Length: 112
Ligand code: SF4
Ligand code: SF4
Image (cartoon, rainbow, N blue to C red; front, side, top):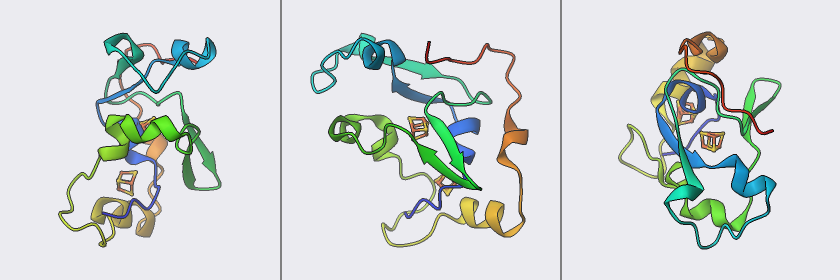
C-alpha cells in the first residue's frame, strides 16, 4: 500500500510508537526493549506528526531504526504494495481536515 500521507492514521489510530524519552536521551534505538515503545491512543495527535501544507510528515521516518517500528510495517487496508491507500484517497479528494479526528480526552503525548 502506498501511504498518501494524509495524516489520518497518525491521529485516529491506536498505535505503538517510539517512547519520546528514548529520543531525548539519545538512547540506543537499534536495540529497543519494551520500554522503548509507548501506546498512542486513537484520537490523539502523534508527537512525531507534522504537516507541510496538507502533507503529513513523520519527523522520525528517515532514521534507520524506524524500520523496526510497528508504524513502518503498517499496511492497513490494502493488500498490494503498489496500490494507493483508499482511505487516504478519500480524505484528500474530499479535502477532509484530519485534525477534526482528534477527539480523545487522553492528554496529548509531548516531546518534552
Ligand atoms: S511515529 Fe510517525 S508514522 Fe507513526 S504514528 Fe507517529 S507520525 Fe505517524
Ligand atoms: S489513511 Fe492512508 S494515506 Fe492516510 S496516513 Fe493512513 S495510510 Fe497514509
